[in-house]
Amino acid sequence: MAHYTSYDGTEIAYRELGEGPPLICLAGGPGRDAAYLGDLGGLDAGRRLVIPDSRGTGESAPAVDPAAYAFPRLAEDLEALREQLGLESFDLLAHDAAAATAQAYAASHGERLRRMVLVTPGSRLQAELPEDAREIFESRSAEPWWPKAMAALQDLEAAQDMDRVKELLPLIAPMAYGRWEVPQRTHAATEPAQVNPVPRAGFWQGVGEPARKALLERLRGVKSPVLAITGGRDAVSGMRAGKVVAESFPQGRWQPLHEVGHYPWVDEPELFRPVVEEFLS
Image (cartoon, rainbow, N blue to C red; front, side):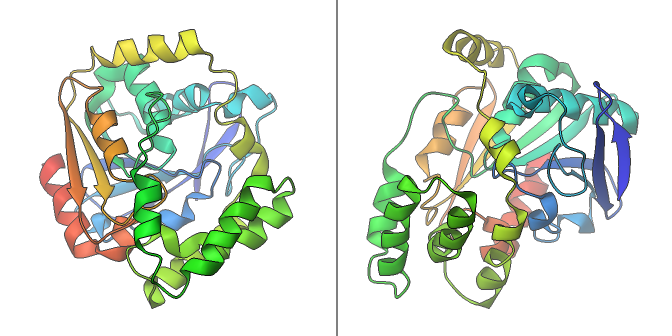
């Protein structure tokens, strides 16, 4: 792991994989160690992947000020990383909740972005909550894992203790994947140990309605092409949230992938990787 010093003196860790044009990759959760991204289905074959642990996760130091866990502040950590790497412009990939960080970065530093890929983003920033995630979940009720996942979801809504949350995560994990086989089970098993409650709790804090609307307005001026990828079996974010996010950008494009879930590089790396590579090229 390499490290850099961010704008407020916090030490942020990042790892690099592969060789070629740089692609900075942001992990979601929110507040999850970036190790779960792996090599993103082999994207490191033609790209130099730069994968930071956001503050308070993985090998990165925690924030002194809890407000620094909010996603607009995490976007400033990304700008500090760009400066550390000496990049005038770069390609960016963000997964899950990190799509909000990426959008905040685009709103503040859009001139630094070449192209941006948002993988299975939610549309909370757009204040739209498409119902298809629930529809996808219910459509899978015949699968063996579903009854326990349904009960765990109900318990999760009332869970106050992070230890209890971590007990429930393995039970609901299958809903995040296109199928529940060895690669998916192996990937899901890492999640409980990678969740960090304080960064997770602070991610959406302190961003009021005026700030949210102002951020969205600035996205209308982003000139970079943006690709939002969603999975047809993603019962976490659903499919249509990606369409909503893509429509926030002048050059936004929505790419649904069928038979994959919230982690398309795990379910179908040979489908996911070419889509990203073609867009970035």
